[in-house]
Structure formats: C-alpha cells, structure tokens
Length: 269
Image (tube, rainbow, N blue to C red; front, top):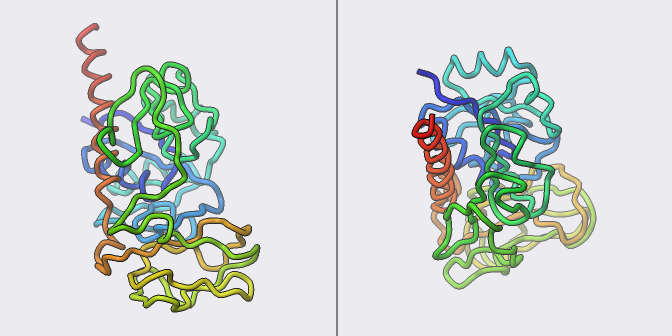
C-alpha cells in the first residue's frame, strides 16, 4: 500500500538525508526547489538534479520534473522527483498529506499549520503550533533530532559544527562579489594555502590541510562574504559522497514525527 504523499521544500544536504530516509521507508516524496539552488554539499544533495537533470545519493536517484504527471512517473520508476516550484503551486493539485520545510532558512518561510494535515519544520525560525505541527531541533548536540511540539528550536549561532577542532575556519566564504570558478572540485585533497577556487579574480585558499567536502556550483555569482565551500580536516574522501550523521538523525526524526501523528490519528478514529 502506498504511503502518504510528502511535499518537501529544500533538497540540500540535510533535506536530502530526510528525503532519502522517507523514500527508502516507502513514502512518496516530491522535493521542491528554487531555480538556482545555492547548495554547498552538491555530491549529497538532490537539489543538484535541478542543474543536471538527475542526481544520485547513496544509490537513490532523483530526477528533475516539471509536471505532476512526471512526478507520478518518477514514483513508478522508484525515483525521487525534484521540481522547481518555490511557491509550492503544485500543492493545490497534489494535496499532500505532509509538508516538510527543510530549507534550513532559519527564518519564517510562510509555512503554517493549515497548509496540510501535518506540517514539519526543521530548525530555527519556526514555532510549533503556529508555523508547523512539529519543529525538529537541528543544532548538533544533546537535543539534535528532538521533536518540539511547543515552542521553537534553539536559535542559530552562525557557527558550523566543530570537526577536529575546526569550526568557522573550515567554511570558505567569498572574498568579494563575483562569479565562482573552480580550480579543484569536491573530493580534492588540498594543503594549506592551496587555491580551491576563485571569485572574480580573487583566489580562495585552503585554510588547512584537508579535503574539499563542499563547493558551490561552478559559475554561480555570489556576494561578498557568502558561504561557498567547506573543507574537512579528516581527509576521508568517502565522507564527501555519503549522507552525514546529522542528516541521518534528522531523517529519523522526521520519520518518527510522521508515524507519531499517523498512529495517533488512527487511535482516535
């Protein structure tokens, strides 16, 4: 029996971990994206299908679609459909059972509880009971993945997760406004001060020895200070191409939330 239709906003690395978990659990998921996704961890993001027409993460294939008929065709083939529809226009026709905001926008994106029988929001910027039926904590630490039925997730600190003592240092930011041009790509092993890419004519250097874990799409125009990449000091290439522990945890929490509400509805029917 086919399970609920789930409309998910956001196909970045965290959202892709959620979509992958739900897809493998038998749910019909459609991912909605913007026309130019600004994804860093492209190798594990279904949003890459917007550019390439197809993206595969850990054996799960996503395909870009433009019509509802193509969404259903993708489901029949066992694929995840990705549609450019930031305004969620397809929702009126699809009538999803669940809407998930996985954009990690850290602000109110217009999500509210009456948009679907169940609405789920990831991270700060949402309040349970107003914007979503449940908010899921995304901050690494003791409460990661906790379901919040009243209140909001912890505020965004602006600091990335520390890996082997590196936090803000491992994030690459645009030194100026301009178009990014890759010198190396995701998976490249770099030494401190190696050139990873250029923004305009200015080079972006590796902050330490490591592996390029994420890098924004080549040819993207970015403002000064914008996050464009991520260097991992562990130098394990496979980590660039597999879903992170944080993404897996959030995927499990979303699955828990869906089953919790579905089973509660059955119990009260």
